[in-house]
Length: 102
Image (cartoon, rainbow, N blue to C red; front, top):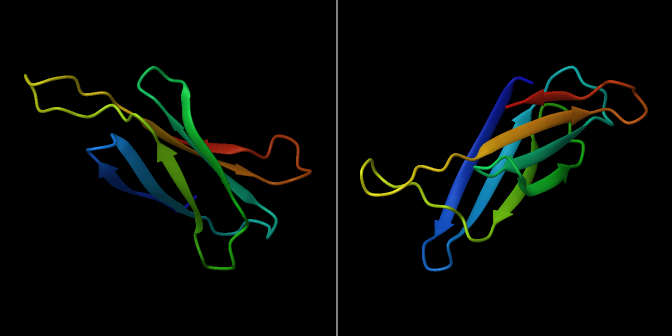
C-alpha cells in the first residue's frame, strides 16, 4: 500500500460523521479489493465498506458513515476518544493474501 487518506465531515447537530477514504496500491492484481474498517474507541467495528477494484493508477475509494460519533474535546474540556481506520487488501482465491494497515 502506497498511500492511505481519510477526509472527515461532521454534522454536530446529528453527531454523525462521513469519512471519505481512499487507498492507492501499486502492483496488485486487478481483482484485488480494499476493505476499509473503522474501529471505535473501545475497538469494536463502527463502520465497514468494501471498495471495488480500482482502475490502474487510481485509488480504491469508499465512504464510511458513523452515527452518534464520539467527539474529541480539547484537554480539560472532555474526552479524546480515538478511532482507528484499518485498510485490508484482499485478493480473491489467494490464501493468506490479506494485508492490514492501521
